[in-house]
Image (tube, rainbow, N blue to C red; front, side):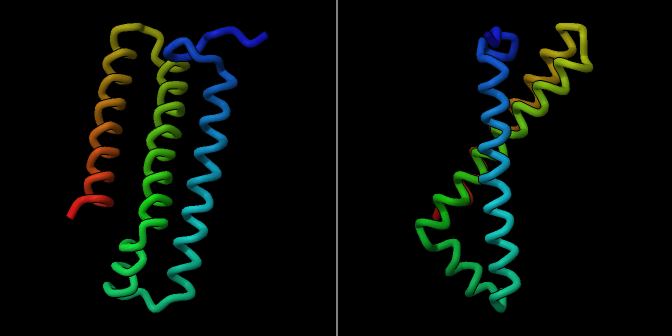
Length: 114
């Protein structure tokens, strides 16, 4: 039985799954973008046409959310392992969480804004 030892009362298995699923999404996104850049003459028009397609915006949003989740689990694990004092660990985790939140909101605004 896996006990609840990670953040917010979740199990380590949940964090492991978040890391693996988000890593696959990020790998697929990277491979697709690399293939697009190799197979296409990348200009402003081709890049704009790619990002104007709804399916690609959704794929980009999935990658953005995966990046945030992947980074959160990784940073939480590192700070929990290496910063033993509760006060500084909380401040570092809060700062990292706030920065990731801002980046995700900013990314959503870039993807779906006008």
